[in-house]
Length: 188
Figure 1 (cartoon, helix red, strand yellow):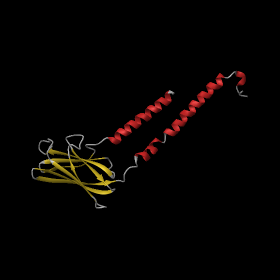
Figure 2 (cartoon, helix red, strand yellow; figure 1 turned 120 degrees about the vertical axis):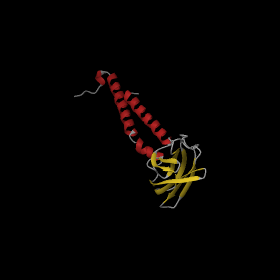
Figure 3 (cartoon, helix red, strand yellow; figure 1 turned 60 degrees about the vertical axis):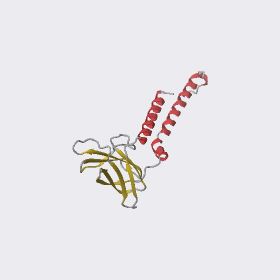
Figure 4 (cartoon, one colour; figure 1 turned 90 degrees about the vertical axis):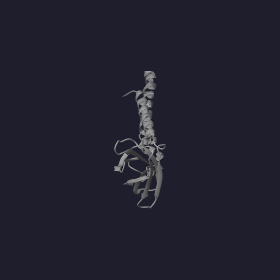
C-alpha cells in the first residue's frame, strides 16, 4: 500500500470515527432557548440537536437559586411540547438521571412532526410552581444514516479507482521493465 493510499485510508477512518461519535453524543446543553428569573429561581432551557428536527429532541433544564446561583437539584421539572399544526402534545418529566451532566435535568421528547412547537417547562418545589416557555421551528427529520452515508461517502469511489489505476500502472511499468529489450515495444 502506498503512502498516498495509507494517508487516504487514515483520513477516511478518522472521519468515520468522528462522525459516528458526534451522531451518538447526547447534549446536556445545546442551544440556549430561554433563561429567566422565575420567583426564587433562575431557569435556563437548552435544546439539542440544532436545528431541531422531528424525532428525538433533548431538552435540558438548569434550575439555579436566583440569589446564590447554586443548583437546585430537588426541583421537579416537566417539559411539555405542543404542536401548532397537528395539535400533538408531548409531556415528559425531566430528571437528572436522564442527563449526562448531573447539574441539569433532561427530558427526551419524541416530536412526531415538523412545524412550530410551543415548549413549556414547569418547575415546582415546595408548593412553588413556575413556568417558562419558548417557541421553536422543528424541521423535517434528517435522511436515514444509510442514505446520508451515500452522499457523504461518494468520494470514496473515485479515490479507490484512482488508487487501483495507480497500482496497475506501476505494476505494468515493472513488468515492461523486466522484459528483455528486444521484446519491448519501440517508441518509434
